[in-house]
Every structure is written in C-alpha cells, then in structure tokens.
Image (cartoon, rainbow, N blue to C red):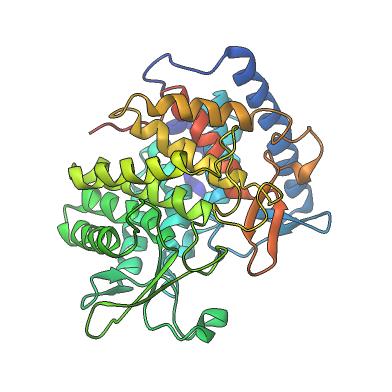
Length: 401
C-alpha cells in the first residue's frame, strides 16, 4: 500500500463513521480509568517501537522481554487493530498514522495460503482500516485475502482446512484435514468479500464451513471440540481431538469463546436462526458449567484437573465478553454477563499497572499449556478483544441484522 495515502486516510479517519450508536456504557469512572490506562500502556509500547526505527509487532512477554513476531504469525493483525480501537475509544487523531503504518506493513499477508488465520490477520487490521476510512485500497486487500483463504476450502468435506497436515508439529498428529474451532473467526472476511464484490462464492464457502462445524464440532452439552479431522478426499469425520486443551474430551476455554463469537458473526451475516440457537447452547454451557469462577474469567480449560489452582485465561474472557455484547442485541440478558466480565477485567486482578506487563493491558492469559507456551502472560489478542468489548459496551461496532 503506497505511503502517499497517509494524509488522505488521516483526513478520512477524522470524518469516518466510527461513532457511538447508543449511550449505554459502564460506569464513567471505570471506563475512563481503563481508557486512560490503555492510552498510557499502549502509547508507551508504540513509542518504544518507534524509537527503535523498526516496524515491530508485539505479541507477548517471555522471560521479562516483549516478544515481537513476523507478519505471517497468526496474531499479527491484533496490534494494528488495537491502534484503530484506541482511536475509536479516545477520538485522538494521533493514533491514526500508527494505525495506518502498522496495518499497511501487513499488505503481503493477503497472499498467505499456508494457514487459515489470514482472516484473523487481515480483518483485525485492514477490516478496521476500511471501517474507519472507507478507502477502497483497503477493500482490495480484504478481497484478495479472502481469495487466498478460499484456496484452503476442501469441497468433499465442505470445510476450510486450518493447518497443513504436513507442517510443523501438526505433521506429527496423523491428521488429513484438521479444522479447529478458531477457524470460525476467519469466516467474516469471506462474508465481507461477498459484500464488497457481489460474488456469492465467498459467502457459500463460509456457510458450508459453518454448517459442517455446526454438525460435527459440538457435544450434546453445547461445548465444542478443538480439532475435528476430516477426510478431504471423501468427506466425513476421521477424529475429534484437541491441540491446546487439556484433553480430547475437555472444553478448552478460548475455544468456547471462538465458538460463541464465530456463530454470532454467522448469524449477523446470514440471519440463519440455527446459528443464533447454537450461540444459546454455547452460552449455556459456558455459564452453566460448575467450574466457571464467580468473576466469569474462566480457567484455561473447564476440565483442567487442578481447578481452582489452574491458570485463568483473560483472553478467553475478553473474546466471550465481546461476543456477548453483539448477541445482546437479540438476547438482551446477555449484556449483564458481558458487563460483569468487563468489570472483572477492569480490576487490578487482571488490568496491569501502568509501566508493567511489557506495556500490555491485560495480565493472566494462556496461549497453549500442552505446548508449554505463553502461560499466565499478556497476549495481544486479549488486549484487542478487551478493547473491542469496551467499544461494544458503549454501543460502537455493533452491526445488527
């Protein structure tokens, strides 16, 4: 993306429709305190990166040091997306050039075809850029990224393959066409591509994937498996397992959040009542499970063996809260649980002191305990979905059917 768009996009952002649609909000003192902390924490993080003279993308903290990631990491869109959300929350135009700079650094990601998370990466960055600016150059990136994602569609199974079965640690599991529940989050870029182009093939692939997930990924109690391995040549399910949860039959907390959020997205774009009903079932599992803590920030897995001495996952809580605010447009009582989660995440139990936590906002998230990776640390996507939940609590970002 050419840098000469910068001044044009800055002007466009100033007049964009990133507006509040209702006046509902958490108590003003709590909201203002969180926004102030975010401004200081994330602002200092940006300043440190700018002083380096590089374009760096922070993901987490390891051994006391911020870990930066390449642009093909699945989490690379969250930091640019956070810049757009900080502009939304503060109205401060000084965030705009950073948002543009860190978003446009991901331009080549639109051609990524070796994993499914291109939807995460481009929607969180370029999706927000398009929302705030209306610039069609950003729409073009979204559409090209959707085309790349569609190359992973396996017609016989009717799903988008998540991971290549021969790559990395995934290649040791004996899978043929692994699909993870996280993949539901990538469908939004396909729905948007149909809106932007009028080409219904993107929409059809998204619906096919959602329908297969609806049929094969869930247990009778509403909880979901993490990984379903399909036969990509003949169709059908080969196995149901986990990669990041405690056990194949356990309920990995963030996976339940992806399921809730993903089917909420599908309902928004299709109006299919089956998807809203599935959200109800997932919700009822999440909040009906005996191991859900009183503050509604779940343990990393609902069936982890050492509860209550297991790590919490603030990232799962943030994803769930954001999804609940969207669903509250149709099921109003869900807002109460969303408010309780946001209130919990806004306390010192999870909200880091300014100047600590590697300048990330939230503490106590979990990446993957089975891989001994990112345990009880900050994560860039926890911050992103927490800020998104705050915006939705204020009535922003909500697109009702």
